Length: 310
Image (cartoon, rainbow, N blue to C red):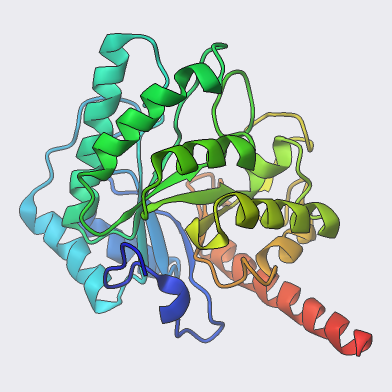
């Protein structure tokens, strides 16, 4: 398989009780060596981490021994899946030279750390065209992504769909496919956020709309490029373009998320929470348990439906 490395293709490697990786965004405060224990404390199989503060351009100077701890946890299977989320300030579509230079440096730094910890992927928001349109900014985006991809040593670079506000890029599969197909690299893939899809106008709790989205992704880029899901309920209405996450099962999507998580072409993907949690400190053990329960309930409903159709 293109770009494969130990652990890169979790779909073929999953061997858990329910056959799926249930993970979460986990704080790396105090050092990346703290991540495995924090994941274990909430029963998360996989993690997403910021490798620097999300509130500043300044990169974190990681101690080699801290990187080694997280890499060992990934390679031993203590943590089954790791993605690094690039900071939100990055904008590969900007027409400001200074911002583009800082964006390039931040992305390359994220990739360097992801390589060092044997991460499975780097999640990236491409940025905003600020009203200039994707067509006008595509050549620059493609050039910057090719520079970034040349630095990969194992992980995939995963473009995330946006909530669709303003000039943000990646609000639908067509925009994402335009970028991926123009770059044409075997380890450029996708991370689909359920909340972002919902608030951008795709009701993924509706069987027909969900099937149409998955079919579109498969047709435009190939479903194998979809490497993980950000599983977030929505605290805003479908089509609102408001990026507001709710705890799973407690927002606008509710139990309808079970349909999404159990789709035949999505059901074995790593699922990563970016929810507020019940104390406002991020995903917790209760959220992980609810995520697993929704996944299992969705599979059970689909199996029952198949039996009734026979």
